[in-house]
Length: 170
Image (tube, rainbow, N blue to C red; front, top):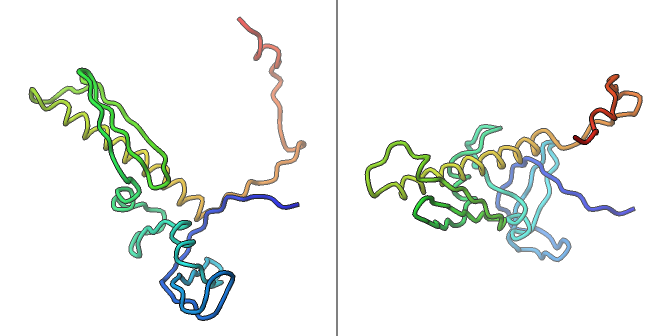
């Protein structure tokens, strides 16, 4: 049976011109050589590769998402202000929109008149932290895989708790 899969992997790649006709690519087409963790090397057309892989840089330590990567992942910001709050909406390269709101009352120190700027900066920092968290999760999946251990019914231990007590409505 055919199935769809989501995959993540940490690879090393470099730009390389196709040396032969493969699939829809012709000799001389731009692309990337891709080296996988097991040493296998393949080739991918430029557009396909750049749509599938996020560069984290040659010097980034494994397990680390740099600030530049986070900034590049955020395509645009929109700031929406009211008298009492500021909301920043950020659109990511994958078209996901993340929003954070900072209330004027939550700011303890600001000079008169600039609270909205401080709130927008704080909301942007919260968005960057959220994007960092998501990209770190993605990197961890690429490094560690996403296979789930097979759990058998006999391996599951149930407590002596009465399940009817858990689900009783009050």
